[in-house]
Each structure stands twice: as structure tokens, then as C-alpha cells.
Image (cartoon, rainbow, N blue to C red; front, top):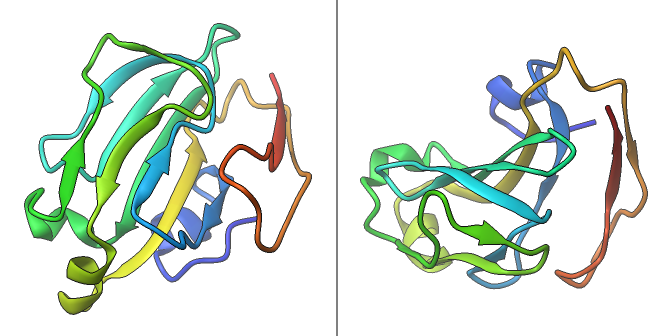
Length: 135
């Protein structure tokens, strides 16, 4: 389902989808609790009330940027709603470091995920539901 250059996601280790952002505002794809804000500010763990574990990973190979192009807007333990701002990413800085800006949304508790259905493709508003997951 994922179409990206990073095999950690594209080779089937996780179910999910990828997004090409048109600006640096990265929003939560689900309502739940922020379980992790990576020290390098490029990735976030979320846990929904139904038990779905979601990883939002901003850019490919962006861990090497040591958090510089990211301004985090949430903290671990914070409850977020779908559409809340997680982070502002400086997409130009990411690109100038020869990294891709693709945002990967991965469902990491794969043993519990029965199915993932992609509902939308192409250009979508940030508030659009693009996938459904059955646990």
C-alpha cells in the first residue's frame, strides 16, 4: 500500500500510507494519545482509543537532521484530536539536505490489524480521512 523509497515502510514491515505534503504543517491523522515524540522531532507515536498504534514519520532519512527543521507542537502524554497540529516541518530545509519530505503514516501493531483500506488518493485536504483500519 505504501509507495515510498524507504524499504522500512515500503517492503511490508508496516501497513499504512504515504503523503506528499504541500506545506510543513503536519497534522494528526487520528484522535488519541501521543505516546512518543522522537528526540529528533521527526516522528510521533500515537495510540487511539481502539488500540491502533500509529507512527507519523516526517520525511525519509530525516533522523540525520537531528531535529533542526522541525518545530514540535505536542508533547508525550498529550491527548490530540484528528487534525491537531503535531509539528511544523521546514520542507525547504529538508529538501536542501537532500532528504525526501514524504510523510509516512504507519500502523505499527501489525498483529492486531486485520485490514487497511485506502479510501482516497491524490490531492486531499489535511482533514480528509484517507484510510480505514479494522482491528
